[in-house]
Image 1 (cartoon, rainbow, N blue to C red):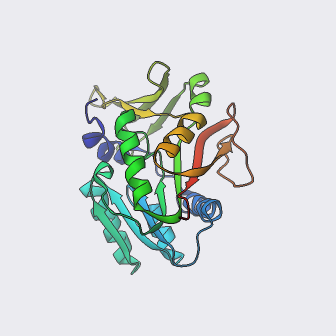
Image 2 (cartoon, rainbow, N blue to C red):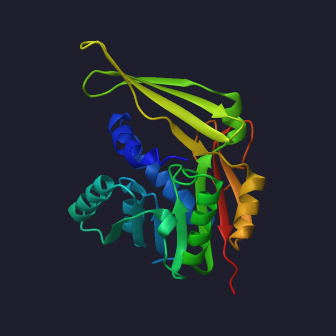
Length: 257
């Protein structure tokens, strides 16, 4: 599978609408992370595929020792600037999560904003294996991805206008043969009469049994699933609903010995 994501994400994120509630939304997701993984004060956290670093920064504000990893040099540089502006000690590193080679030490490893599922099944298992190795004994893992059950039945189209007044269309479809949620962004500039298609994004959307099996292969147990029914945010008290949860969050834990 071609590395479609290498050049796509920087442009994709530049086109996405900025939510006025982003800070509040990120705070609520970090609340969920703290409770679901039982993070202790000062815990060491690895945020894989950290993007522009918003979750990493919020975790650092709460006193955790955070490392943010992303393939994009542009995202990492922006995250470092934001951390410096708040005098936050966050270690942002540019790198490929498939090459993660740290052994034992993190209390938690996170894959947020659908950072898990980018690669083919072999590559995704490699990422999970390396994440498990990076955890200390008893440490916890959290994966946040698309719920395949929901998206297989609810393809849809989003529309918005960017800061330059261009129309942005985003079409989602579920590829049942490959178990991947695909989305295509079209940029329409009506003033110039231009139309441009971005590379298609394709993310593996795993079922709960598939993730449980993959975690077992990586040496992780205590797998639990959570949902965001109706897109209303993740809660530890909110069970996963195959028919109503947009997203699927899974936690797992490395055995204490």
